[in-house]
Amino acid sequence: MSTFVEIKPEELTENPFKLIGSDWTLITAEKEGKVNTMTASWGGLGIMWGKPAAYIFIRPHRYTKEFVDASDTFSLTFFDNSFKKQLGYLGSTSGRDEDKISKSNLTITHEGSTPYFEEAKLTVICKKLYAQELSPKSFSVDGFDDKFYQDKDYHTMYIAEVQKVLLKQ
Image (tube, rainbow, N blue to C red; front, side, top):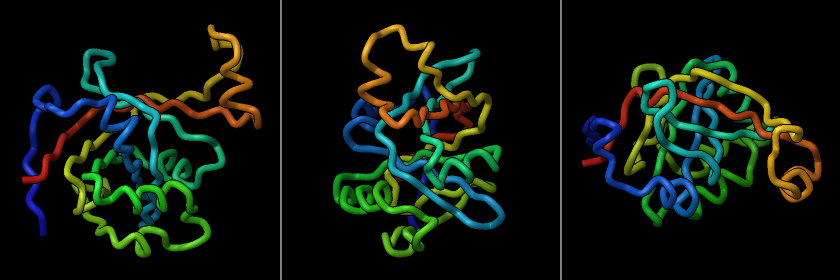
């Protein structure tokens, strides 16, 4: 079993643009005793309402959305590059269709009631504060709707308070 140490959000030294945009993250939540996860490369970390916050975006057809909607919390887990193949698989396969977590050989563990993965190098435990579906009328740049939402499957944006940051020792 790996050892994680809790750090303050402001002690995080990794670049969130790289962590999320290049390295990717797993968004993981639990519903009725079952855990599901998905790979994401959109989102952010910052400050909202005076609190350290995470911002995630999930399309309506993603199975993980049901889990995030049903739970008060979720985790964001980040891995070293040796896990890129598993992250690709977890982002392209639905948990509706198979037990993709078992097939990925990742180990679920919990911080309180929030699931995350033992193999992660960094975990952010988040408590949901806000959720809203993106609206095409709110885009202030032409072309986003055509480029990113040809199927009109607008992401739901979630803003969550960062409750804990766990760094692998």
